[in-house]
View 1 (cartoon, protein in one colour):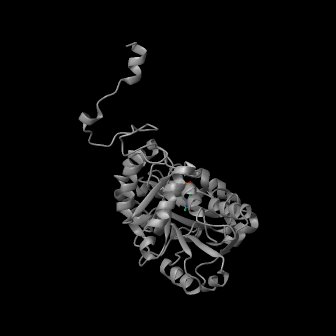
View 2 (cartoon, helix red, strand yellow):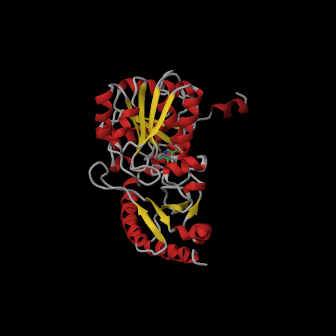
View 3 (cartoon, protein in one colour):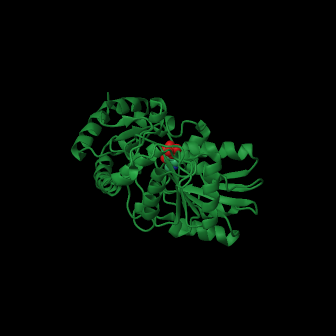
Length: 369
Ligand code: PLP
């Protein structure tokens, strides 16, 4: 045989290697006898990660997609022409914009409401097909009671799909599917990856009908997570509990430090207990209004906090939602949400608490320069 033909067919015998860790299946297709068929449908790395996430969430189905926004877009595929969507007003800026664009493009009804106010049910109409929210909310970390929303919705109209973005709580601390949600979505880019080195999204459900549609749509639309990202996130899941426990320990100390600082007007933390059994590493704080012109000095005075979109990682991060996660919203929309330039989002990584405190003290002093 020509050696160039031969090298095309060289293979290591994978049946005899018996690795301790599932290797990366960096391949687009499989032999006809394989349970796998084409990576756009399924791949061992993606399937293994889905099994891990199903076990963690205690649910029937978890589908990996490319990003958190792809998971949210997948949920939108359950809307039909003329349907109406209700969304809690406190929500990640890109989700807000996606809903606006999607509903305008397909001529669907859309209402942003405050789901913590029982009056929200007035916005339910015969066309209402879906209610979507994050809890705790981004920003301000408000709790939206999932069981109550389920009950309130069912009292007015049956069959409304309840979709919860559980990214910030994670199934370790909150299980929306057991509280009445039909679908859960996650940005796996955050706590699941935990290292700011890859992106991913998850959509999970206990309903077979929804799971089947998701698998079919994912195959046809090509939104599945790639094997390498799946492999990285699967590895990160081995330390998920340890990271979350450390995040929980750190945030309590950091919140009490921040509460005591004269430059800070308010610290926002979610209510823990009941629906939310614990909490990770993200908080918001409002700097006093008198420091508005100096916010940038504070941000650039931090040396242990990465700036930008990094979040829920082993390294701490700081962001100014007004110019970051909610940048695409108009000043009026930001005002309605209560987002001012003095609102700061802090995510604590795995650094020593004393180092984080020293860094924050130095940066807070710069507000007085
Ligand atoms: N949901 C929440 C709550 C988020 O904070 C984000 C991103 O910050 C997303 C979804 C989108 O996730 P991704 O960036 O993986 O698309």
